[in-house]
Image 1 (cartoon, rainbow, N blue to C red):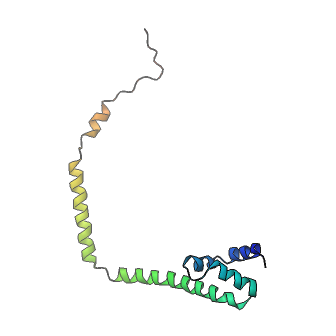
Image 2: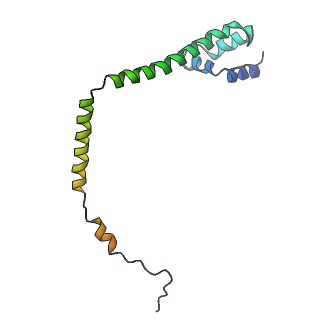
Length: 118
């Protein structure tokens, strides 16, 4: 088996890259397995099944944790936080000047095609 064939095998099975990145195995070991057993052996199921089970674990607990977090929220505390945020925004609005519209109305645009005489 050549290195080019092994590279194609890795491109077809990108989950092998994760094992090398996590230092669970090395490229040398994977190449030796590929050279000894080929790509259609049951030895690769170990790597594929572990990756599929970790994908399932990553997605399902996320939704479960999100549901548990929402379930445990105290709505009174959330409402108090929103009220204090609203008060802070109103206070910030009070600090900004409100007379900006009068400055804009005094502006008179210059005519576009006006010629200046010397």
